[in-house]
Length: 594
Image (tube, rainbow, N blue to C red; front, side, top):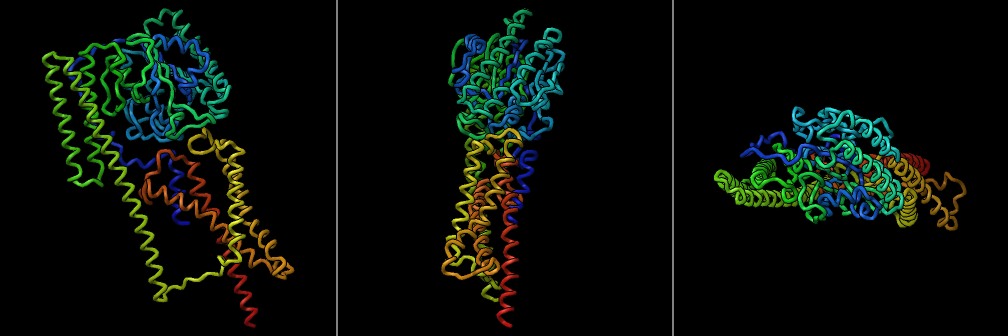
């Protein structure tokens, strides 16, 4: 109970305050560019479609998205960062960074970002910035730095939300035309949660959203601005066929990303380059000729934009230095590594730094192509070393935590054995797990678990951490399963005891049966909690022991509520029954003695 209760209480804070020990953002310093880059665009239209999966976009009838594909590059292997929740990826887009920088791990995050964002970096004196969205994450992450901010008063994740946003955009843009414009549509994600990506409704909503995008593009054209604009169409994640996201599965992470219009090379192609959402903002800043922030770790898509070789060399060198700085900062943050273990990584970092110096030297003598290629190789090496470091850290952490759990269990067991041998404590039981009780107890446990599965199936299995989008979706099935299964675990063993024993035991009243009934229920509840407790131990082994564990990134408050808080409530029932049984047997012994 103590272990699970501590786990559950810790879980309740997951969505709002993840214990991210390796956030290095505050220790990073600005990386200056070696030269002055040249901008290739001064106007960007960003069209966001929440939850649109790439293959379903291709299947849908979307003439406006097709036109963007013909006028730009489409990235078929584009993915969200993990976990594939909306606000996690809103933050990743806004900052060009992953969760180790943003500290945003779930949809419940409702604070302003503390690191540079696309809008905070862009100087309003040079570029006017606009945001037309609902009052969700975009408003929180980019709204305070927008020169024109329209937060549409609409029902979040309704099927009319996109229409309201489109109407607001059509009404706002002509009188408040901005150089940088982000417009967000959430309807596709709402349908994905309710019907799944394999449904006809999902495809139809993509087509409806395409019509909204068409109206906005027509407006840009009527204003004479379409040909002067770089256009980004992207989504934050995909969806499972049955609906849901948040995990690592391909369909959950594979979204849509099209880079089109002004400043884009290789128009009309589909690239299979692995690309993530945090690459978009660094790429847009490069196209605008604005330096990158030291917290950005998304890769600039230099091969797909029409910058000069000199400008590409400037950004390749800056990004290589940024990645090397992040790599070194992370090495220093990992206290579990010995000095000897760190040496190969630090040597790798020094090698990267030497190559960056070489790239700078080539740049200074105007050998821009050579400088560019060396810088690209340096950045790739820094990312490779970084990946190896994280893999080793994950393995060491899991080994340490597993050994710690084994050690704790061993020490506790040995202590109980020692105290019992010295007769300091007495370990006794009330024959709860006798052969006569075992079958009813297991029947009660199996019935309760079976009904849990049936209830989950009746709700379409759409309330796990990787698929829910609101408390209304997840709490009803969890509470229903909890109360129904708990009731069955209590009373099914009674029925089984009665049916199995009514011929051999001549009890006539409930009072005469209650001793057997109590023991059968206590055992049934015990067997139910075993897999739950095992699941908790598994997560502790993987993500760390109390009180310093890190809640896994795929966790969410309600998913851990069911394996943290509710089993503790479940334990209360057998505890009460044990007290009743103790009192009953004490009274029975007193009667026998008299």
